[in-house]
Length: 95
Image 1 (tube, helix red, strand yellow):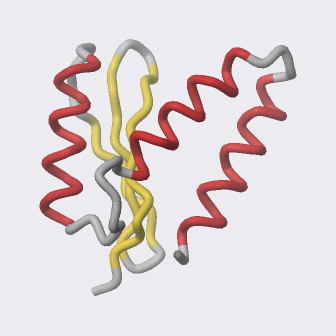
Image 2: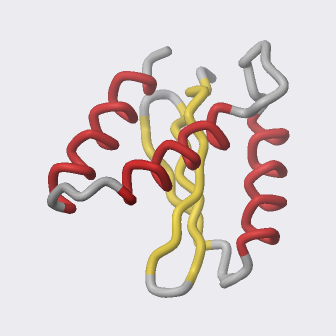
Image 3: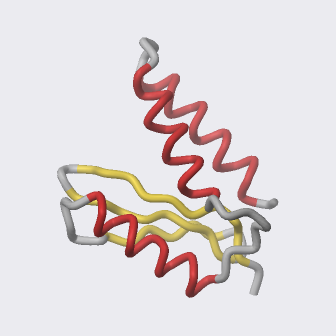
């Protein structure tokens, strides 16, 4: 089973969710929490369970989450920001 290196979390309606890819198929998991620290811990559990193939100490999901937070601060239309984020997810899905 091929596991994508992409795993990250996001907040929607005061709750955190994880998104990751297995065999090219995207999966979303509702963490059912409004705590960012708990969401980070749960994401690490998912990454450990799936096996993070990156040879780095910083998980890619953490890097992408930081990028998403950064891009949200840029004064561009929301649709443009999400197009950019979606393109990154698609590019990294097969890495």
